[in-house]
Image (cartoon, rainbow, N blue to C red; front, side, top):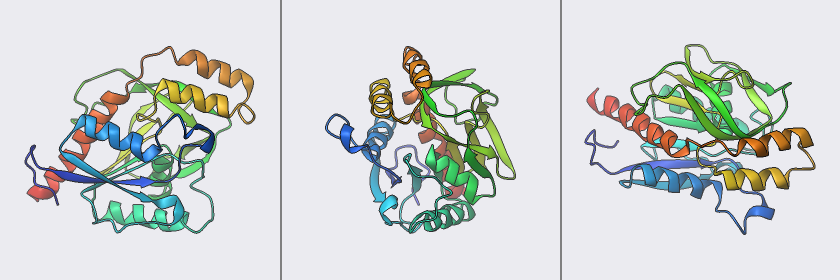
Length: 249
């Protein structure tokens, strides 16, 4: 486990649950690389290693100091060769109090693994830049804000939070957009690693499956400022605080 010192080097395991569509891979780096780039920008002292979870490569929870997921085109309710195993990984990470940050699919898996419920939303696709109201300001929020803008791309939502979860942010469209469970599990529905350019390209690539009016709204929303960098500052501080508590206990 990493030292509590703010200058200590530490490792983050990136749990890759999906990849950039092949049609966009020539123009954009893959999801694990987006997350690694954003994490290192927030803290150059950390190192990253990726496990391709969606291909069945699932690590042991103690192989890194902390964990973060990518998004995925898959559902956490799928029955396949890896989803159940990944659910078990999340349960063990929670039990052993390893720092875990679930982004989009990872947040939904966190909810499922810990007793919540995830379903396809009757409100349809969430795309573009979504604005969430921030209800509480945990200590790891280095900058207090009332609203947070993040790129989103999802059909499913967390319908029921796990027991003992703390709701941090939400909106009318997505009531549970950020929540935590205990002191070591943090879920974020939005994609702080996505840029407006990638969101635009992804919507264009999915015109056949996303209603035209929703894409039009999503494209218009890209004019909003995006708080991805700030969110990664929060993520790093959340993980460091969790590791410091563990080192002190």
